Image 1: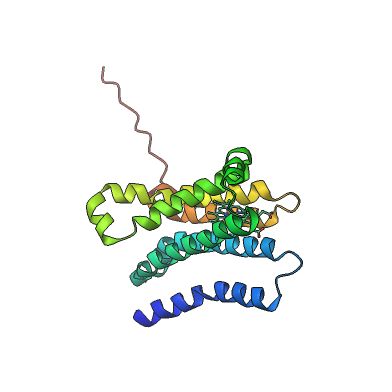
Image 2: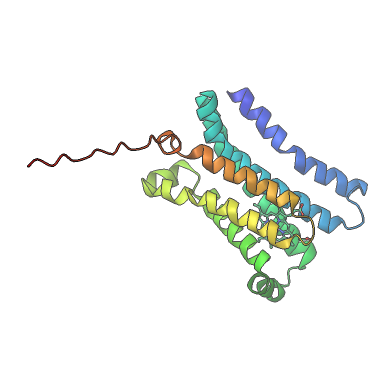
Length: 202
Ligand code: HEM
């Protein structure tokens, strides 16, 4: 499994390598800041959806060790979200805290993106064994917020797109499918209840 983990770790760094390569070789198009923002945001969302796909994939394939990759993939989603936030804060807002707070409060797509980022931060900070032990049963409940983080990120994308909604709707479709695959089997294949007629004894 260790080889798998190293391979997935190195593969997960490829988008970062592509961004750095593009930035140093002037391959990011006419608006490099926008390109970096789009790339980092897209990868944060993709890693989030891949993380959510682990449990259904484990159920379908029976490969239990897949679960060991979930934490790493979730942390990569947070890593790309941090990069995305940093690009916005540094290159877009130039660390102007007042304008940043105004943007978060006034522009709904930034508000939901920020909420998603806040949730990812909490999840990343509590993804260690120490927090698991301390929070006990509450840990699972807290980490269910990952679904809210993904939905908010998709909403963020839908909200900011002005013309072609195709891409964010594809992400929404994948999210809905992953949620359906997570439903317990007895909910999906529930047998119709037999109606038992009461006999009236006279
Ligand atoms: C502090 C939080 C966030 C801020 C301020 C923020 C801001 C932005 C901005 C300014 C854009 C580009 C808008 C444009 O030029 O059209 C963008 C795009 C995007 N963001 Fe965020 N974002 C945040 C959090 C997130 C998070 C947590 C995710 C995913 C987990 C995310 C995913 C995306 C995606 C997928 C796009 C569209 C990329 C594309 O056009 O291909 N964002 N965001």
